Image 1: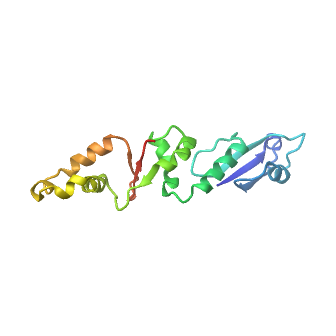
Image 2 (image 1 turned 90 degrees about the vertical axis):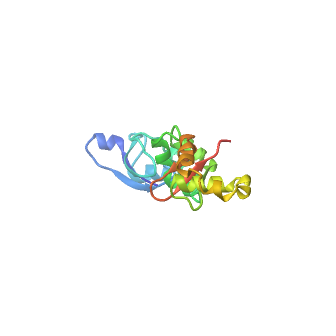
Image 3 (image 1 turned 60 degrees about the vertical axis):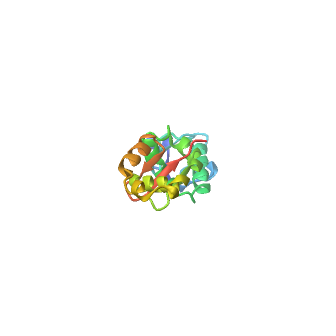
Length: 167
């Protein structure tokens, strides 16, 4: 994550004094690089590269905390989809999605809800005892729709399906 931070006082005077910073970054480093002091105390974020929306006046401590959490949770493939989870209503905001990432798991070998339905049915203990005449006639499309309607699955559109567990 990177942010472009400007000295707001100088910016308001028509002087562009800002720099790109990798997050997390100490306030003292920002202050020194863009000239924050007793006369010029305020800063603003004018650009960013991050997996979520950043406002002009986001607090640096908040952004550092989020950056640290993202770094800790980077091993979970869902990290790249958190903004989409929020956008599509799976979570209220990015922080909630980040907090809930431990309950989101990738559905191995599934790229569609029909794949999930097949895996779901086959994982049931009674499936192995089911006569083939029945198993060949299971309506996986209907099972997929039912599972999708429950709201615990997220199809990314690029060949990945996630499942969210309530806990």
